[in-house]
Image 1 (cartoon, helix red, strand yellow):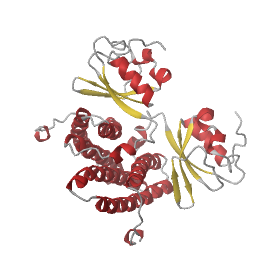
Image 2 (spheres, each protein chain N blue to C red; image 1 turned 180 degrees about the horizontal axis):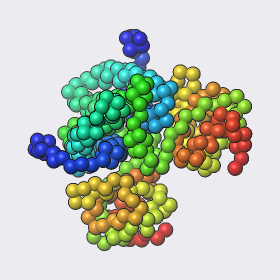
Image 3 (cartoon, chains in turn orange, purple; image 1 turned 30 degrees about the vertical axis):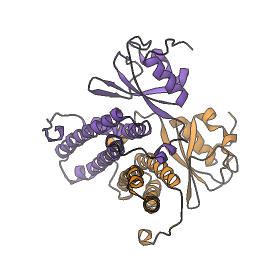
Image 4 (spheres, rainbow over the protein chains, first blue to last red; image 1 turned 120 degrees about the horizontal axis):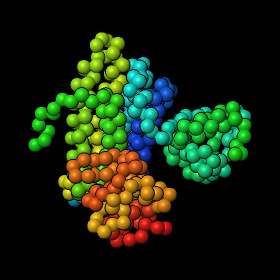
Amino acid sequence: MPQFEKIEYKPIPVSELLVEMKNLSELMIDLAYSAALFNDKELAEDVIELESRIDTLAYLLDMEIMIAARDAEDAETLIGVSTVAAAADKISDAAADIAAIVTRNIGIHPIIGEIFEKVEERLMKATVKEGSVIAGKRIDELDLAARMGVDIIAIRRNKDWILDPDETAHVFLGDILITRGAPMGIKEFKDLAEGRLKKLED
Amino acid sequence: MPQFEKIEYKPIPVSELLVEMKNLSELMIDLAYSAALFNDKELAEDVIELESRIDTLAYLLDMEIMIAARDAEDAETLIGVSTVAAAADKISDAAADIAAIVTRNIGIHPIIGEIFEKVEERLMKATVKEGSVIAGKRIDELDLAARMGVDIIAIRRNKDWILDPDETAHVFLGDILITRGAPMGIKEFKDLAEGRLKKLED
């Protein structure tokens, strides 16, 4: 089981670790609710996998903080950093708990759906399939925000997540994209990514 | 101390309680980071106060769930609801932990500021002061989204929080507004709310 593997220490700046923990944990909440809402087991499993990524980051961050603290004054201000990291860890735990409703087949109570009825923005997962017009394109070429009010918030490529990808990043065949947007826009985007809709032009 | 006061039972639909817990807990994260970022003790205290509001909601929700469950099947699907509620509670705890960095004067490490440098949207707190052009106006009259890319996400009036206020809601003298938006826009809005900027016209 991966959680018993020894995590190898490699020096990573504390700020970099903290940014990743913060962004990832908040993304996980959105993803966990999406998994519950769409009863998407695979997405729920991804969230649970990300939780162990957060644990690894927390471990590395704790090491960095210990190394950085030379005296009581250092230690005091670093407590704040460690608190923010612990908060991100708690948020990721909460996300994994929500995701576990899906993976454990507990069943999504209609109330959970109801709480999303008022939400204007939804999340959608789409895989870039053979023949999709978006495969190989740069994100800024797609002009998604203006075209359909859609934002790609994460790309899963092989085993890695690219979070909040740069506008200059490319989208490749096989990428799993997590998008956020209005229900109509994200549906259209999914059709484009999965090759059911062939025209990018509006 | 308020946490030792007995919470009086009043029947509130489970979905209503859950929506409030979800929205409030996510708002709290934004507010807690804002408190840390701006080293705003009052806002941090508000977050800690909201945490006890979440506890009250969780208590009432647990009661409602118990009353609603008549058999094992009910109980099983209600476990999902209770898990989402517990997740919201965890998120609010995380927010309160971050807020406590501020109230305990631990000191905001520069790294905490750094993690917000890449963030496009910020939060700002503004009080509607005597002579402000926005006092008494309806939110839709202000046309904030189009004018300056600002969204009012919460209004504190007396002891109550109005979260995600309706576009038809009014803004009154003395209201504390939490806004989200691009740094320039929220600064302009704060100047309007606090009476330093007198013109609403663009």
